[in-house]
Image (cartoon, rainbow, N blue to C red; front, side, top):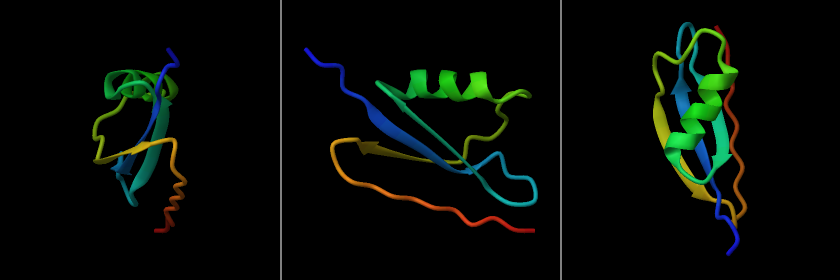
Length: 67
């Protein structure tokens, strides 16, 4: 059986002056968080809002930043 993956998107991720964005493609949320934590040098303090998308559909997302 083929492994099913989902796209996990956190908006309002690690806000300081502006909101950040984090995403991972993984089989579950726990694995997605582990993958992101591995990429963040100082750890994750605030995850923000989570969206989960099946990756068998088209999806696009953009976040403008600024100060």
